[in-house]
Image 1 (cartoon, rainbow, N blue to C red):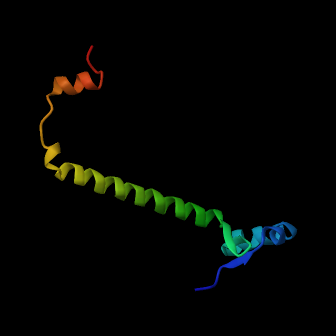
Image 2 (cartoon, rainbow, N blue to C red):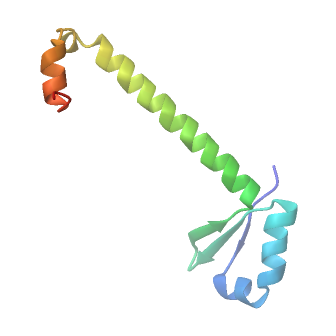
Image 3 (cartoon, rainbow, N blue to C red):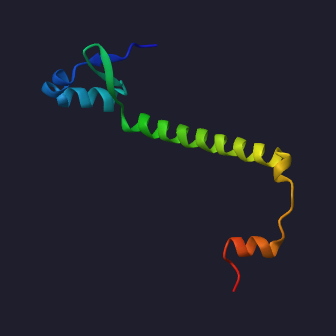
Length: 93
């Protein structure tokens, strides 16, 4: 795997067009550093959208696992009468 380039924000500022082209056209992320610490990352929109979809899928999986655990919990096995549920959700006329 190719190593991710790290640059100082001041360097990026001087060559902003080059930096943006490298990231957007070549899909090569860049990490901004200062005093030896990573500050932020610049990625292409394609990479961002993939990351966004991946995070959404992960969140959905976490939600599903939590729902399955809740359904398996014996404390959640009691039945709630329909009238009580409607009242709780303020669905009664």
